[in-house]
Image (tube, rainbow, N blue to C red):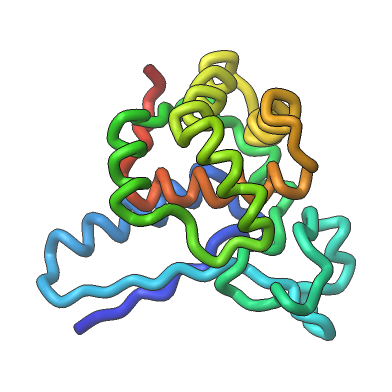
Length: 180
């Protein structure tokens, strides 16, 4: 058995690098029968080089030590926020089905708030917001801003929701590269 550990949202990561990571993983999966992958999030632990000058590298989603584990998306690099998303299209119906089958996102910092958004608006609303920004040749940060405006959420909640949403969509082959 081969196990791959994937670290997402590290400093320098973009939507392109995240997409390419999962595409390469898919190619390898198709060649091997015994295969396992685990996803973790870059975490700026106190006292580490990664944590030094963290505010210059990105946005901390939570300062609480309760969430300083790699299973939580607690950091969003500026490189990802500045990523151009115009080449990406969310496959809304496929994502909706796979989201329901998977029981949603796990290990959320803003669990209650994000679950309320999904229950009230649906994953398709978030998908449509992403696709609208993509058509306008926007950046990932524009998607986050639009979530903030349309869903009236705290910006940190929007960042966690947006990051978990796009990582889930890419991981589950619910994103097309090449536009609409």
